[in-house]
Image (cartoon, rainbow, N blue to C red):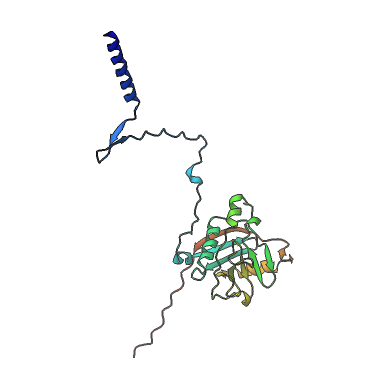
Length: 242
């Protein structure tokens, strides 16, 4: 009798142990049972985890519409004097957006007019000529723009995008014309015009150069954006009543 009792007790212990080792079960909405999903252990945070602020940031005029872009004017304070310019986003919106972003972020500050062709152009916008050349600046300088040729004429005072002979290769470089260059019409993206300071442009263009390199490059000490003056409204004079 003791042996039978001991055998029954052993079987009871085995059954209880096996039940305890089974996963917990939960009922579904349909009444069926299925093993419950075990909770995942919390992931340990890294002590040197990078903050989210390191994600890529946009630039001030990335989402600006044409009306907003057209309302912005740019001023260059240079070693030779000031130059102010208006924008033509109706014809070249991406060139204008790019130029305003570079100005707003201070990318042009301390850069120089690194190419001068007498009686033709002064060219700037090469970010490597400034004092802030970093990996981030190099990546920004490599960003290309789509070509935006238009009906705007390349004449004295026109602001246009510099590029190589390859399509869609404009980056940060720009040039200002001191004369007429009809061979650039319909090919290069004219996107603005000098409104004051052509005497400064002329002074830069007339300085000594060697192989289109200024012997003493003129720097843009500060580039800023300001609201363009509102165009004067003119109302046609009505003829006197008879």
